[in-house]
Image (cartoon, rainbow, N blue to C red; front, side):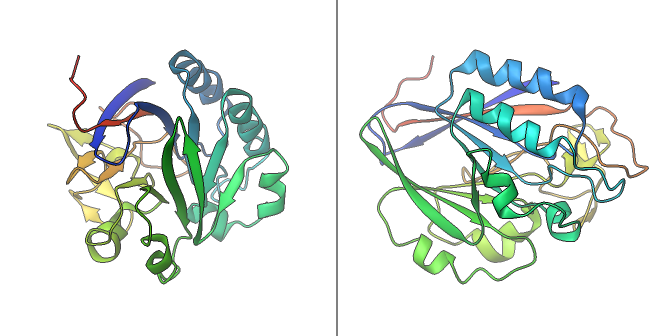
Length: 236
């Protein structure tokens, strides 16, 4: 497992902020401790969990709640749903929120850190994006948790959102010369499997695989550390 850092500069913040993004846990115990160790070392303000805590293929979900509980011990945690939660709905929003985490389902909350204003929203997979109309109406720094990166091009790219966080693609499963080979809903040699796109969309490779048969190769699991800093911040 690796740590990947991204820095986003904005005129909307006056102080630097550090967040963690975790996605695609898929109920795999071996990845919990390494992920938590990375997050713990960064002293993050908030953890964003971008879907797929359960594994609908193997029908396993017993670690999803302990995973969120572990996140909450490190920092306030906000979660959006993934396609696995939608297609294998054994845990409800109320189940997840008993941990103290906040589940965002086509809605948003307004937050404040060190005098800076943030609006955080979460998209439900396969549903419409009408809620984004209201989400956009603020001068705060807007972060949208949207599990499916393939919706970015047609639904979110032109919207007034500062940062979109996605998972789902597992880095393209097999990466060759920096490119993923296969991703659901994107087909062969997909575009949105990893990295920072258009200074707006960040796609993580996730914490693990599902019970599917396609292996990972040249494609380590990762924890993302995202720093939002003032526009005039000098790089180290």
